[in-house]
View (cartoon, rainbow, N blue to C red):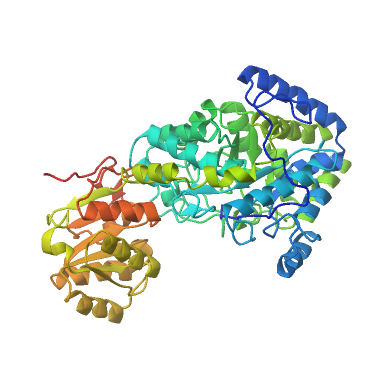
Length: 608
């Protein structure tokens, strides 16, 4: 799903200076999350049952919803945020939203003014949690979530640590690296009060034309994807920074050429194909103990011939996920505001159908008051039983206790700077990234750049900010570099101008991203080479771009244009580090998609 970030300033009631010590008992009378696993699970079940008996139907239904609120604090007074909250939820701020709808969770986005900087996010989290707990501290704490996938989907930005994304980690072929990245990320999220991450992506990206997954997936290989997804589950859910991991998007969003944010994709895998291609990462994530799984808004006609999107499909969400894979944890929908789930039924029917299909948490319905009302009315009419509601609420409550959210709902603001964006984390992120850069072709022997080749460099191609960033990093490493941005899909005139500019430089670094949909990028590469320029192409998105300029003699893949990815690429270009990544996908020919151009596992090394 798209990223939404929420932040807040300290709430009126100040959080404790320090969270409860390990082994202590919280105000709710529950054992600490540091207790042995079996004991913790037993206490989680007992606490959930006690809590369930005290809750009204309205409170139970509220636990099923996770939505966004506007503002940097739980008690925002910013006029624009107050107006947006009133229009969206009929309240002034996040505190009132939590209290009015008895929300089970909130999700943070930058566009909802939640993620300004780490200390502010911690204050927002504490303020919203205090609203959920109530004056007597006897309420149910929130699941506070975001999409911190890293790579190109990073909700919490600098000074938080920016880590390699999924496909970049796939290029290492190292589960240990995926686990390390998740553990760092989880620790920083938990430090600012975010206790649920909508990651890892468990989709197997077998379709190079996939417009919504791409580098968000680890690989096109089910086994590698499964190994890295399971490793990230363990990383997120272990150690001091334990957060709820969420494997997404079930039953698998990897073979689509349609974005479910804007339409309803259809995948035609048969049941045996699904078991072979799509299911392994989810199966391994379940074996790794994943706390939650997110559904996909996609049609799988061979899995459910009714045409219902998976989110609303009982054969998929219950038959495959609950029964065949044996998953009894929390299932959350992808955003219910996405068009992929709104094409078939009216908005007010979607939450009820999702619950009937077997999901537990309803994420971001486009009309939360109407969705909340629809679920209540479905129970009162008998379309849904209260026992069905209890089943989902019980899972949610147990999760909150088992992950230590009940015991430690608040965070210590004094620890934020000591845990977020630390030198140790930043250094580890760069070391991880340095193992991802993939040298796909070096037929001209241009790399590494040395001698005069470093003195007059031109960086051009995709991304106005990216070309400048690349040139700046090259200069910081001692090279002489200029940048020129011709547009992301340059016209013939822009290409000609760039070719003229290149004549004053010895080597041209051309960044590309999504060349299949922007043919001007391929034209730029071809015209530069035809003019005799020494060209190094760098795919800063998916590694499939080279299929659209197949004659390029020197090509790198970075899988991202994040700062650590750019730094790693510059080091490889200049020979300061060796390219160590290997393709986590197969790159097919653009003319014949059945013909591999570069196979899974391909990656060149420098010869010294």
